[in-house]
Length: 233
Image (cartoon, rainbow, N blue to C red; front, side, top):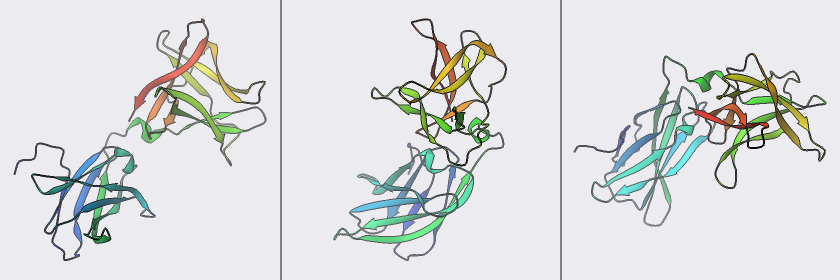
């Protein structure tokens, strides 16, 4: 039977509760697995362990393909955060709605020989007056547009966190980003008017787990302002 859909592995359930076959995934890459039970099931769950096997990185409901009799699960790339050998578990739901563990198998998450940019970057840290260090991240606003956001204080972070720079595509230069507290006591960020050196590795981690380069541009009022940069896997 030819598969014309994404297929990263298949598991056949025979009710023996034996060790399930090895499945494979790629760091930060989604995966689709198919499960074929040899008996009826009213529902099915797929669970993927995190890198150190201290818990489950994903617990996902599977959907049944009506013609093939196969159950399909889509696992987002954020479940495969780094190279590891962990475990996965398949659970079926019986006629009474009760869960039945079918077994567990090895889940191997691979990475490449050329590292992703995200592998060598960390969430931006901004030092505020008084020595407070806060995260700078990317969040979606009410319209779904990614925007930079100043987060909570990072306890134990170094007060001399490295400077943050924003890249301006129009000028081709990097500009220093300064952290300050406004008159209302809110932590804010501002972009320098004059370019600086450095900043090639300045990234902010988004809610999705991907990284965005900290960029800037002149807004409609002629003031340099932060804007979301390109996303890096």
